[in-house]
Figure 1 (cartoon, rainbow over the protein chains, first blue to last red):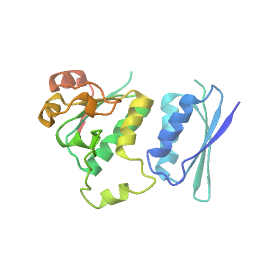
Figure 2: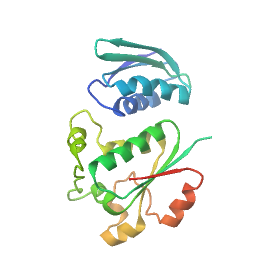
Figure 3: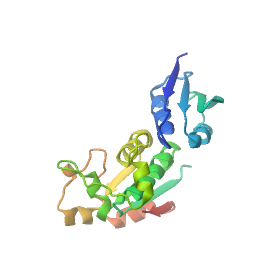
Figure 4: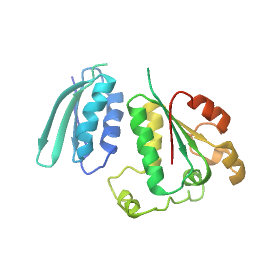
Amino acid sequence: MAEKVIDARNTFCPGPLMELIGYMKRANLGDTLELLSTDQGSATDVPEWIKKVGHEMVSTDKIGDVWHIKVRKVK
Amino acid sequence: MPQKMNIVCVSGMRERLQMAAMIASVAAAVGDEVSVFFSMNALPPFLKGGTPANAPAEGEFGALIAQDGVPPFRQLFEQAVELGDAKLLPCSMAMDLLKITEKELPAHFGPPTGLTRFLSDAEGGQLLSF
């Protein structure tokens, strides 16, 4: 299963979420995407979107100023 | 059942178009049925050919959203269409007054629409205006 990193650091809401959605559409079932974001809003927006749409939240970690948000495409 | 989010844009000010675009794109992203009606001063910023009208800043925030890293409103509206099937509908009355046709508007905009149709389709959903 592919793993892709999406670097959305230094972009502001809703940029990181939109980037993630674009990549999710093109990803295959089972693929994991890791979104890097410095935008605090995205750290809460992405899990909300994942929950609403029905994908899997793998993990959220903050390393320094950067959130690393891992999600998996399950449908 | 998806929620309906309807947005009416009449202002050409940057902050208002930016907020309308943010709501349209995020609502479309979570699966809402989004329709945006563009009329009056909100249409000229989308004209192709020549220079699309600048969306002037209304206040301090206008300068902040013009910086790098902030997704521009035109891009967010386009993403709302591509990622969430939003409908961007130009007001037919405003198009008549501006003397423009669909050719002057981006391809991702829908057909010229009148208020009767827009309001009828908006029934049962939320309606926000900017």
